[in-house]
Image 1 (cartoon, rainbow, N blue to C red):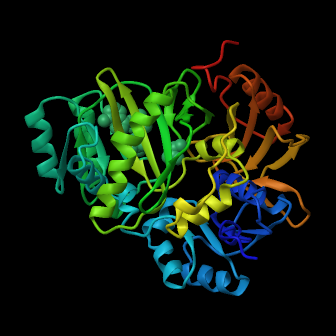
Image 2 (cartoon, rainbow, N blue to C red; image 1 turned 180 degrees about the vertical axis):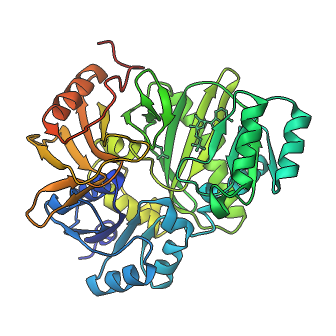
Length: 434
Ligand code: AMP
Ligand code: GLY
């Protein structure tokens, strides 16, 4: 007989996206209770090799194509990885077609897609965040800067592929960043901007899985945004991560839930937004307390690769419960107690122009505690994988200590090679003794 808990298990799942995050999601959903088959659109060289995982050659921007494929394949749960399609309304389109979707609609995705919108929501909900000034013209922005007479952080309003923020050290640098935005460097994403007070402190990412009303908080993770060892050089999408980050103990994480995540979800509801997906809070732990640096409407990458191996086989059920607004019916999500370590292997030149088409050789034997996820890779007709993007691979390991987890991740990375492979040797320096 149909047990209400069992009937909430999705057997056929589609993951939308083609990065390391989506490889990790497809892997974790594939091992979830009750999942019979996973599809990934468009996927990458790693998802193409994943047992039980099928590729769909449909772009993440092709909402009509994705909807048609979901209906044809009788997909029961769609998990949308990247922010672009969410901000463009993919989840709305799929929901209108009757599908259960984990990922917010376009309105909720404003949390990431408009910094002005997100800041206004934070102020309204009394969420701790740096002071800010919105501006919609060059002259207005420059006037604010001159009146403040100190270098402010300059943020293009819209999605700018992680390149829209300048943490200026001087007024001159802040002026140049403002000019650049209004000269159109970021297109429509730079039609307006936010100027923000500069704060200092370590950063940590916290993710809440939301069903519109309730939420489940995942262990905190710390990313490494700079390309260079010692956290130097240009910003990247993220060069490695670890979890659970000791920066937030259980009490501090509870504080984040109460003072950031729950009020954000409540403020979204107050705006009539039924937010079903991830709220990603990028926090800075300043000397005067935590401050929200940014919200994203999706999992972080590489935080997702780091966290997925710690999550239990209830994941698909929990995401389905979020997608259907019924987290109250979901089983508790088991979270392993160990440490997870992730190191990203990038292509030569990253985060600038990179070489592509280099063959990826791997002797790495994945196990329950060691995973190789692909990001910028493509499978060739002969079955080999070649590099096709900036961040190419993520090697992730779990162990009882961070030292052991990083030793295993770097040991795994030594089994993988492609021409020009570039990675930081100091990922996790904050928590490693060796
Ligand atoms: P975002 O693109 O919003 O993730 O910002 C990129 C990076 O800029 C963050 O990870 C921070 O390191 C830095 N940043 C953003 N806002 C501030 C701020 N108000 N003060 C200092 N650094 C900031
Ligand atoms: N790891 C940073 C991000 O996904 O935005």
